Length: 141
Image 1: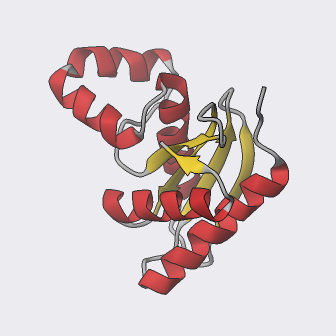
Image 2 (image 1 turned 30 degrees about the vertical axis):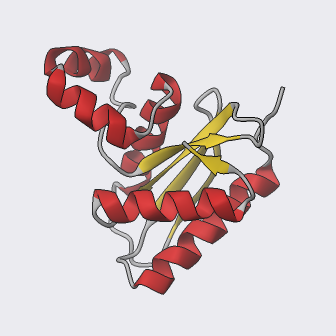
Image 3 (image 1 turned 90 degrees about the vertical axis):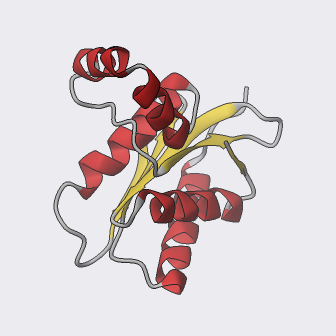
């Protein structure tokens, strides 16, 4: 079974932050979770506003828990809002179906975690998450 290493999680953070700075995005918070939704690594850039951790973690936690990017979950939430309100309540506030998190896939395609970002638009957050995952030699899903 493949698993996410600390070195890979730290590289995901570094790659995501590098892309964010290259694009000129606002200060970010980025959370990398393992396949069980446990925090593996987190970074909050200087100047990032409060709640960045909670939002980034909530996006990533929902992605890894549901096995889909947070963009896909946001679309599903539009189509079935009652289920997603109930899901968020049962998850004790850990679940946030908004664009800005992607699954982390091993080279063999196995889900080994998720990364979520908060600080920019959902598109910006998602873009840097993908860049971080790819910088670690892994696949984003």
